[in-house]
Image (cartoon, rainbow, N blue to C red; front, top):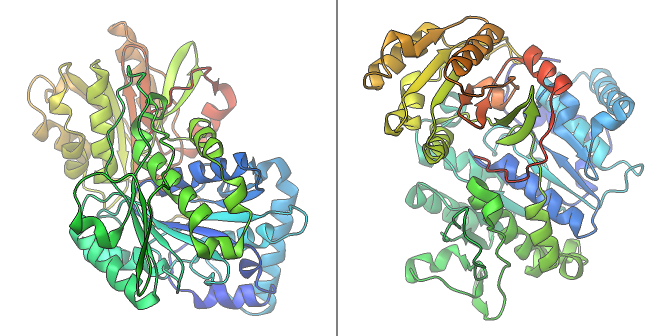
Length: 503
């Protein structure tokens, strides 16, 4: 088994064939995209669970252990570590006997499908997140006969070495998950012209209905006003109407029908916060599942069990580890988050601006991340309070030897160049090659200024970017060092606060 990235489906298909094709024995929802796909998977899993379905979930990368990527009926596989190890060994032995060399991600993907199809867990369906791209990703092996719906979350520039350097090239990879006659849900996009053109072309070739999540007002945290239902429009009608619609429009291959009374319950309460777009995507996805003929043909109970209440309760009760997750640690209120590219950094910066508090940022980046682009996207110069930066590095994750840290000195240089005085002076920029030392220094800064800072890092999104943000009453952070993450999980405990505002 190897740790390097080798895109392609031939090895996975061969290995699955020798396991009696477990990936074809359970209905799936397939989710691709650059940002938000893990959160959409978490929301949808919770919604379906609230509706009474037994749901499997596969997401990547893992936090600490490969088993973290797999959830069975709402429970992490770590509750049954022996079952995971047995399944992994079974897949490994089958591949070895048939002379198939799998990457670590291919092995994990096949293990997930093997567990999902096991009669031991009696799952009704599974939610599967794409690992990288879509077209040639290891998860892209299911067929129309067991794919309920394909979903594409926001697309932005990322993984250029594998997917291309333009939005259109990247969108072509993401749209590669399209299956004949399987509906596609397209989340709100930052680059709609390029993305919609690519998806339209792919959908036309595959005879897919395409729906898009339309822009919708974001509730203010102090607002108690109830919001009207979410509108759902087909991609083909977006150019014809700029006004919000309260109807569900289903665009078929050769004709179009309108169901004028069908709407989606609005889940966008203030507690959903910065996850509003992912929540809206998951809600829309659930509504298509319960109304579109293709998923209903595969799983008829969706129309009866996926109620408005299940959707609302699912959105309000979703917990997604490491995405602006509140915990208590050493008498401090801590908020953990991971952002891994420019688009995610922009959202993170918007959230920091809304806090209106002094910020200390601990940052580690993986090559070839450009620290100037990430810091520019955060736009900390907007802050009314001066920002401080602690630059650090991380340990190489297991089976991800290609992930190498950017020099902390290079991050510091970019920070000084972009931020105006006094944020750019030497007293505001600190360099540590040990993440634990970086944390200790950040804590000392916060104590000197009577602020609270507590954080432990976590292994997120291929360890591409790490932030610890310090403010008067809360910490916002994301991180990369696995050893420190174990420490965090060992001593930390969940906060009673539920107002999670994820990026």
